[in-house]
Length: 211
Image 1 (tube, rainbow, N blue to C red):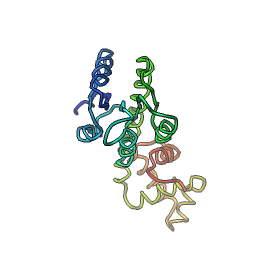
Image 2: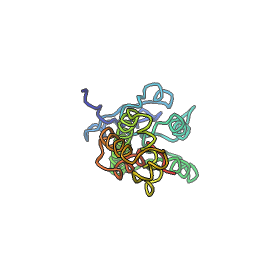
Image 3: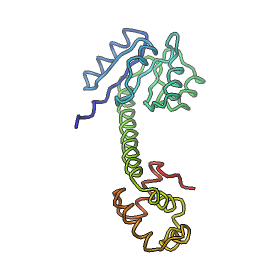
Image 4: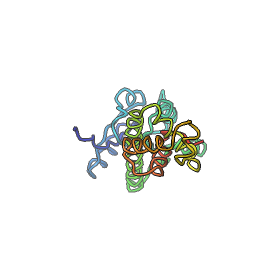
């Protein structure tokens, strides 16, 4: 099984000196970096499977940093963003933060402040990706359940207070013993130890929405 790629700090800034200095400072501290002079260049070179975070200049030409952030959200890319700017104001920073940016740093800023935000961004990205992996694994297992097993699992999750074997049997017009058999198979296939654990897994991964 191939190893996961190392996290990368993407730097998008139209100022070559800033790109170079930031990349050098980050690499000296052990970070992998990849630099781009424009939003379009980043979009053409970015692989969503690559873990990391984005240091993004707000005042980019053609497509601004905020427009790039909005486009990434539209595409479903949950890449943590740290804005840097030489002329951003309060409205711009508020908009960026509402869209999920971790910080909005005005140039010049202390490298220590940026590095702390990079660490926080990489940890956030790692947590998100672990959650996505957990959800994909859960869905793959759920898809292997039979139609009846999915139906019963849905009842467990949607109505946990009324999910005894007798309750489920009454709803589906089958015997409690049959429900017990299906429940055992569901837990085995989903690799959980109890219905409570199944419910928690289904809710946290949004496998089955609780009503």
